[in-house]
Length: 191
Length: 403
Image (cartoon, rainbow over all chains, first blue to last red; front, top):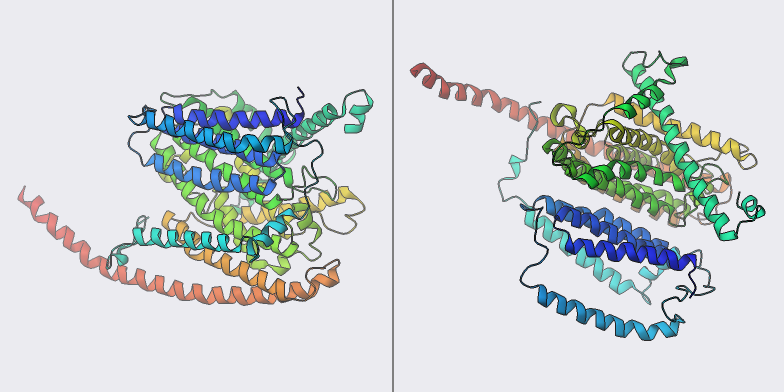
């Protein structure tokens, strides 16, 4: 049983992630749920940083906390009932079953990997004893991999097209009807 | 520091931990104390812009006025009214100051003194900045006050909109330096990026002003409509924290302008005498800070729809074009990937400057056309107004006469 600083930090961030996630689904206040979701996502960013993947950690904060969580809060503010929301509904049994099956599935996939990585038991050193140094240009390599036809160019471009389609769809949905364009909001023009 | 602690018999891990904790503590304290000076400087400059004297009673030139104000604000009652979401209400001001102080972590003060030289420096700046909008949302929501909530709504709409051009503007130094580390960006500025990318600086300043939420972008706390926006229900020390956060953020924008575009600590002999680099950085930051103050004092508040139009329809396309042009030119210009002296950087910088001037001229022409169209629209509306007004009076007059 050996507790290194890394494993302590790992436990801390895991606690933040899982605790935050638990609070998201149990709190009765939707706004608090959104804030706990941010906390949980922040924990994930911390785990990325611990795995010496600073770029992923930064992106995690920018995209999930800075953009998606804020959009969720926007949606919550347009919701009529925010406080005293019952945390469960009639589908909770199905939810529990799916969660258990998913957990079992992940556990069966991950467990064989543990021995391969040299992690044994609960008190194990969570990271390798002497991890190879992270190349200084790992971000540049990531960028090159995204535009390299041999690597991830196709998925990257497909994702871009998908996002573009979503953007165009959103614009189409909120476009004012024909003829109404001249009556753009003129609030405050008299001030 | 670490060596000293190891010498007095502490283990290496503990020594590093203590040294880092002290470093964090020192940086945060210096940052917050510096705000006292910033508030004084800003009040003085504001006074000069408005033909006043500004604080001049407490201490020489009123220097300790801010200290007196700080003591007063701490002694005020901390009001917590009914219906407040207690935890969120208390957390919001802390998060607001934290989001600004965290920026200071990656600021290179001298060639050797920097909190952490992160390889993702600029991305980190951007990630930390987004915490500020969460603080504002939390404050507005937890206050249980319609004005506060409206302020938070406006704030977040504005902050999210202007994060896009700001990120695109911050990418330009990254492209020019070939690195996201702030220290590397400063090191590679043999010629200030202000010369190579003046349009980017302009976009960055506008977007930062909007992120600050100050005039002319202060609709989030517009006094005449929203009392004080998201801060309405805050009093005492918690209001003080928001206040400090705002002023510190304003100076931090100056710091960022200095680091990203004005060459940071670079200057004559800065490599040999690191303390000199700190002086250069401060001087350059105050240039940026002064521009921010200047805009704040000079321009009136902009309407909410105008703010969003400016962000999405003007700044975002402009910064996209700007980024593409800069990246493209930097790629095709010979010798830009091995710049080691002023001589190497001069020619590419001047080429980019020429391209920037062309872009600015193009934008000017476009804006003039847009201005003319806007004027024509307003004239048409004015011409239509007198027709409708007598009509409405005529409608109501007979009813009144009938009584």
